[in-house]
Image (cartoon, rainbow, N blue to C red; front, side, top):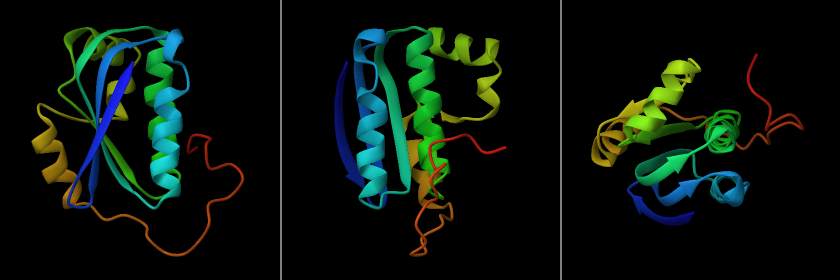
Length: 131
């Protein structure tokens, strides 16, 4: 898995390339966490270059979503390949992710969202899903 990132206004876009599988476990989550720790609260995962995903890869998407959400931010998926889209629908995770046809649409949408930007620090359960 290769991850390139760039910023567009207040939004960070991660361009993922390759296989999102056990072999790359933790890579995406760690990059997302680093950006969130630096104060980023609007992130887009451009999945157009992902050639394959397994259950661990889906788990990485969920973990990334939880990290951003628990810090008051928003994470969106863009250009989701058909295989990932099917897995998200099958697991009903399509209901938790904001998904867009293109990274441009995702960025435009996230630029209009409110995020929690106070100086409050996240609690010890910041990586756990919201109830």
